[in-house]
Image (cartoon, rainbow, N blue to C red; front, side):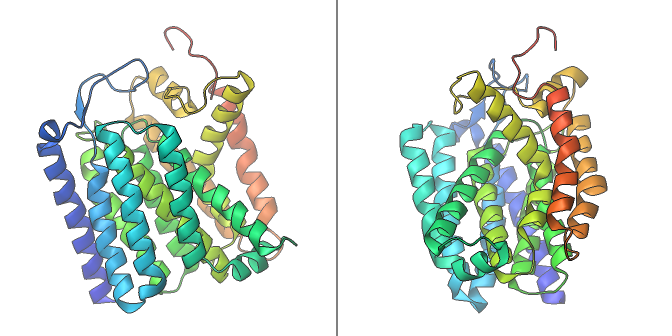
Length: 335
């Protein structure tokens, strides 16, 4: 136990140091983000700080891989490639026609090597053949990865969401195993980064961090579901704040026949940050919703027969709030 806690401390410190180094060298690396019509900040700010999360997360995953090369060595390698693509995109945008197929391929490799499709099929309870289960899992990872990237638009929100989901999942698992410690390791790495990303942010996460976190959280979710330690409704509840805002926004943009992969600032959280004139209160509001509303419902979802009912209860008010705060709606002048 003491050794595991020491590893978590090393992971957090390594992430903080790496983030600080990226911030110091951002100009030379060409990753200073200037404000534009689609951004939610007003001064040039270094980006790419998610590399710190990758450094810390890699240490945590390497420790897990030392005891169990499969599947943790695969997770380590594939997650690094995902992050490398993201960091390259931070420096010089990669066309979606190249970036998205690469994400699909990497997600498919990780699912094929790390996730028990038989266990996933049994735990989800859908009478579908394994290839269909695999396809659904691939779509889920791909969607969450890009969703998480889209939601990384104001100071601290994506990092605090990742910390919440990983810590809450570990708490709900309740037993110290490799997945338990890896979830806490990812949370510790993200915390090391968040020290410099908390509003007002000194550095942004960038695609290197958001795609890495989106990928690894989705993969760990599938692994815990397949192992029967957490359920699909529980993970849907833990991610509900992000899933609702992003999905309502996406649906409204699709209905308006807009280019859905084009950058914008029309999520509910972005509209709120403009309305309130600050990022901090919005990030704190998301944390409050997660801890006060969603975490208890995720626990209720663990009780026999309550899983999907708890998920419905979790989502209904969030959907209403997303619509009320104009998720996906055109911007209103002065709002």
